[in-house]
Length: 576
Image 1 (cartoon, rainbow, N blue to C red):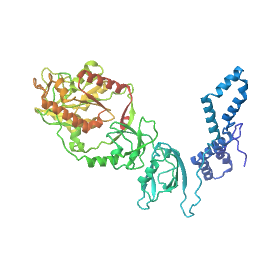
Image 2: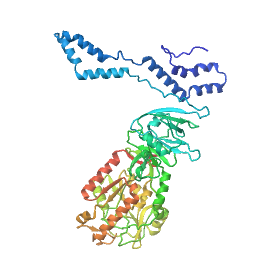
Image 3: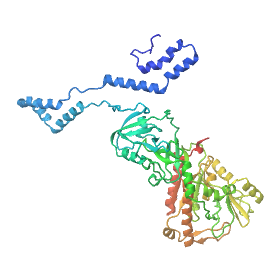
Image 4: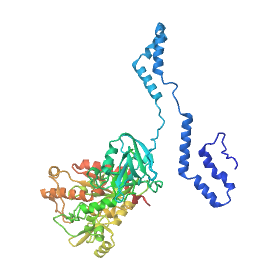
């Protein structure tokens, strides 16, 4: 066989020879299948990795530094004695002073200690009493500090063997590459584990420091781990593994809060996923309940109940969008597109766990995100919208509502309302064109989806306020809503801040406003608590309207960030 040529002026290394071998052998291979076999064999990642390790070790053997001497402290003492009689010389005097300084003596002593020590890795000796009939085993030694090992174990119910259940991504065991899920654990530091409970073994590992020796029977299949593409989830609930009796190992759990962004490292286990916080520099993953498992638990913990939904139909001055909700004083028919397709009972049964998200930033020229305000009656949604409109009428706008009532003489089509026939309104309801609609004194009022699209098409920010049960219908890639929940302060603060204000209860009747009562305050707080507990996972911003000016400033800043910064949104919104 001809000599391999690398085209370089130096002796080729083994890795270079391996890489060049298939092309050098190609002229001597007659069958295509043989050529494919050679390429696959010499291109196999495991073989290339072994060759790289071989070359690194060889380089280390040839070039490892060795100390010149390991008796520098003794040599310094001898030198001091020899120079002691020549202390009249200034240079000699200065040298003697340096050699006798405590920190110089300490430095030389440390040098000698390091120089005498052998830092070459030492493999544990093979056991002398190996049973010829015993399964092939791996003897593994890991050096462990205070960091957890990053593996969980379980007992096989059929055989009683202790099995490595999972390897936590990024942990010490994962980084070593020596232990795999499915390996059978035989000994830890020479202690047999066949008669021990998994909890006892975990206790041994948790309190071990330094080198730990494992004796394991390798799993039958040791396929290379395939790294899954990056998946990020937004947590829609709080989780504390210390309070979870179902988790296999509490120390391996990952604590998170509602709204946390989690990077999923592994979904191989159907019950317990591995994840880490998105901005965490620590590569070690932790256990979290899988979506399916958590949904089952929530469904069992939270029985379906129906709660009354406050509905208010309020009136505001001409030119501003009305909200179509009926107060407890004037409850009438009030529905949404979501309700027309799916019952409220279905909405209650929906269990929030995780939502897959991706980073999104609005590009120049792209339609603005829909801004949705949510909050109980009387909390100040209309006031906040009004202040936004006044602050920049060229940038912010509201929808023009639709109604089936007749136009009054002072009204203009497309200003106060879009006036349509009752027959057409009912047809649009049937075709799910309304976000929300209500009936008052025999007439329909509602917010049509097309009115939202009309505002967005003019490159303006569309402001709407809706009941929270309609949010799921608006959370689409088309609208990409930024949902702001406006909540009231404490009842004591409500008494102070609302004592001179009035609540508006009807829509078209003048003089219908009434002062707030204690019952109004209590209902406002109760409604806010209900909204936050049931729909809080959908809110991207929460503002307490204790002071209207401060709440407006906070809202204004949040909307500016939405337009200029990157945010996590449902991954489906980023797919065009």
